[in-house]
Structure formats: structure tokens, C-alpha cells
Image (cartoon, helix red, strand yellow):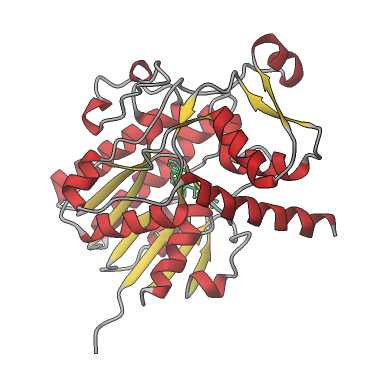
Length: 338
Ligand code: NAD
């Protein structure tokens, strides 16, 4: 009989980690999750065999979680959130300290325990600000990362940790796979409270607003992004893990839209007659007390390297992912109002 593979998902109580764990269970893995918190939307029996609630900034916790000769470790734990969390500057020290501590502990422990392979989730936020000033032509080719100039401390920490895992690969033969995620979205993710990302925020606002009303979009809404549906992201991660390519490589969608177009899509899905109200500059400061955190002007995934090295590509249109996300958020709102 084929031996069951062991996977440890760090940050499996979070959005992508929860979906990844569920997929690994379906693939027949034995899954152990470690996270600070329970998963808010998945029942633990759906996503893992063992759930260890712990703080991975503590080396003793990581020592306990990572077992000898585990087959695969997926490192997704990070102190993170949407633009309102990582671009205001208010959380920089915690974001850098928390995530760097986790990655330092994990890389060290994986070598000690002879883990066979480690996945690390980096982010497109590590790309240089100066290559993302033109909303229509951002450059996010993997090789454009240096000279480094991320626009947030979150991005700097990601870049540091990519290098950390690559150094462990060079010096200790730790087999690693590194992906740079570009805006992953979908159901069972944060959709309110300030840590939600643009697709969830737009879906929630459209679902909450009555016809004739307006939804707020931060900035002029002409900044561009691409968004990848979470099941496509999970598929891309597993294919990268199975490949011989270390990375870093982008995992994202190449369907670039403006944030206003994203809002229009959510409004169209809601079937209501809703206006977009762009809020930026002094008006934004007057309302929120800090500068409008819109991030870089343009960003799109460049999937050429992934296609070349892995031979597969993501294909789900943004609209289809947005319909699934809107439907789920609408259900959450209905549950809340009961
Ligand atoms: P998430 O916030 O939903 O999940 C991260 C999880 O890490 C959370 O459940 C959190 O509780 C856990 N965590 C944080 N600090 C911890 C600690 N000290 N000990 C134990 N657990 C801790 O985020 P996500 O969207 O699922 O992102 C997963 C990974 O992918 C993160 O590393 C993130 O930086 C990266 N990423 C995500 C996106 C995206 O669009 N979602 C884009 C780029 C990169």
C-alpha cells in the first residue's frame, strides 16, 4: 500500500492555508495545521487531522509542530491584511517582527528535522515600487526584483524571507519552493473588519448597499491589479511543489483590471443600481485620519516563467470567481443579520 504523505500547513487557520489543507486532505495526505487561531469558516474535520493552536514566533512551538522527516511543510503563516492594514504604516513593526520570526524559526527547524520539501508564500508586494508607477504597464517579471525597492515593510519582509529560504537551500540543501502570490481571493476569507482585500470589500459593499446608493472606492480607482481565485492558487502551488523548479515564481492572474472595474463587476453581480464614490486626498484623511493606502499604481502578474517551468496556466475568469465570492459574502451577511 502507498504510504500516506505527511503535510504540515503553517497558517492553515487562515484563508489560503485553509483551502490548501482541504485540498491536501482530498489528495490523501495526513494534514497537521498550526495557527494562532481556529479557522473561522471551515470545520477542522474538513481541513486537517490535527490542529495545533500556537504562536509560531516562539521557537519552542515550531519545534513541537514540525516533526522528524515530515514530507512537506507549507509556510503560509504571516501577520497580514489588505491595504488598510499593511499600507498605512501603523502595523509595520508587528508585520516585520512577527513574520520574520516565524520564517527564521521554520527554516531552522525544517533543516533540524530533515523535512523533505518546504513551500514558502512570498508576495507580489516585494516588487520594486519604481516598476509599478504606470497603471497600464506594470513590470512584475521575476527578474525585475532587484535593485529592490518594495513600497511596504510587508514587501521587504517577504523579500528577506525569500532570501532566507534560498540561503538554507544553498547552505543546508533544504529543498524549497517559493511563490510570489498576486492578490488571491475567494470564499472563506476575511470579508470585513479592515483586513479584507479589495474583491471581498467590493462584494461586501455591493451586497450591503441598496439600489440608488453608492459604494466607496479608495483613491481614484484607476490603479490596476489582477486577482486570482483561491482554487487556482492552490492548484498552482501543488504543481510547483511537484516540479523541479525552486522559484521564486509568480502565482497570479494576468487579467488586469482597474479597481473601479472591479467595483463595477461586484455591482453588476449584485444586480443593483449603485454608484461608485471615489475617495482620496484630503477628503480621505479627514474621514479616516491617515493617507489613502492605495499601494502601487499598477500591478499585474507575469506568468511567463511559471508557464515555461511548470507548463500549466491559470484560466478561471475574474468574473466567475467574483460571482462565487459575492454569493458567499451575501450568505455571511444574511447569517449575521439573523
Ligand atoms: P491569512 O491572514 O488568512 O492567513 C495567515 C494565517 O497566519 C492566519 O490564520 C494567522 O492567524 C496565521 N498567523 C499569523 N501569525 C501567526 C503566528 N505568530 N503563529 C501562528 N499563526 C500565525 O492570509 P492568507 O491570505 O491566507 O495568506 C497566506 C500567505 O500568503 C501569507 O504568508 C501571505 O503573506 C501570503 N500572500 C497572500 C496574498 C493574498 O492575496 N491573500 C497575496 C500575497 C501573499
